[in-house]
Amino acid sequence: MESFWEKLPRPFMALAPMADVTDPAYRRLIAQTGRPDITWTEFVSADGLFHTREKKGMQDAENPLVRDLQYTEGERPIVAQLFSSNPEMMEYAARYATELGFDGVDINMGCPDKSIEKQGAGAAHMKNPERAKEVIAAAIRGTDGKIPVSVKTRIGYNKVEYQEWFPHLLSTGISTLTIHLRTRKEMSLVAAHYELASEIVSFCRAQNPNVLLLANGDLQSVAEARAKAAEHGFDGMMLGRAIFGNPWLFNGESPADHTPEERVRALHTLATYFSELDPSKHFAILKKHVKAFVSGWDGASELRAKLMETTALTDFQSILNNYLKEPVENR
Image 1 (cartoon, rainbow, N blue to C red):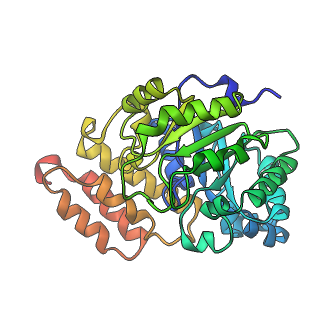
Image 2 (cartoon, rainbow, N blue to C red):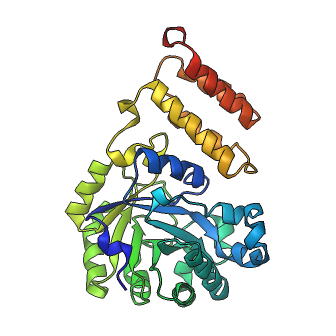
Image 3 (cartoon, rainbow, N blue to C red):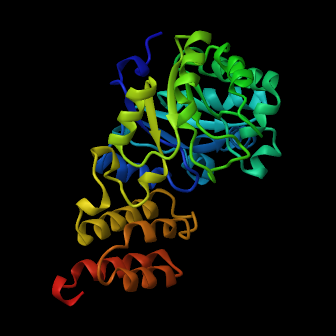
């Protein structure tokens, strides 16, 4: 089966999945301002999709999990990231993602969140490789060969142990492995281990040369990502936190390349999409973007303070509207 992976440029640039950040609203803005080569959704609970399956059809719009899986054609190729430790539920969710038209399914096996690990999912999979393989096999069954299955994980749990962990993954039939170059214990508190990157790539190629390899961790720009891909031999690179306040990231641009008005207008567009796509979601999530978008110019702190004091999305949008209407000399 030829998949979209074979059609991507090398090295390809990917948008990382980040909970309450790369939601449908922000992904839509990114797709319109600086589209990556491939996009991941936020991770979605396969168990939740399974337990709310009766809500499919006319009730989909009422299901927040289904709303998290909204996407536009401009985001393609787009991969639905799922998490679970239950093979039955993963198979169901992978089948559902296939029905929704996603280009691929990715399984999160690296998230260090304690609530996720208590379910045996995320980084907890590293403690139970046999169950991890069962979950991957279930996802492959669910997609029925129509779209590829991939995995995102870390280089170990309490220590660097990719040589013990990765062979389990590389033997399963996954198409792609995204490697966060930190252990679960390290969270994001230390620098990503790019000093190990070349040996990790060589190890993985020897295990299974057909699996594409992406790196994730600390990448601040497309230029840096391309340089590290060339240095270490990755097929692609995944950028995450650098997207804060910079929907132009994948165009090779930074916030400094844009005027305050352009940055505020981008935040205004994000707020509009947020209200349209998931009006029931608490708009405090939207506030996560304020500091990143509104900083670095005279008057930014005052605008930022006003936005953070709002208690309703309509007030938030009104403040942005007023700022954009006010003459530059009066700001």
